[in-house]
Image (cartoon, rainbow, N blue to C red):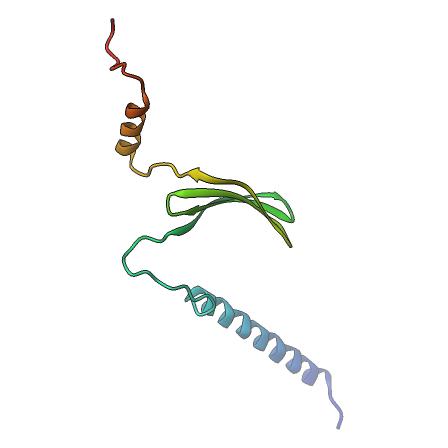
Length: 114
């Protein structure tokens, strides 16, 4: 049995088609959440979130993680994690609540001119 160039070309095209099909199905599966199941808490707000991430170099990233109302600053590496600062108070989401906190923190001065 002698294989010609057309047979090799057909084999390569079939291989490329199958690999592309696998890649598309993988992307769709991740997009619709089949790869990472996380328990949902109903309508309640999530307790854990990633606030911000900043790359330090190709192997390490600086991450700010919020749990409840507390933030933690962590360096994530290829094989290690390092906690830089813990128990950072999270900023207030509501601007009026933040203003009220600042007003309470000020000394007895009401801001009136003397």
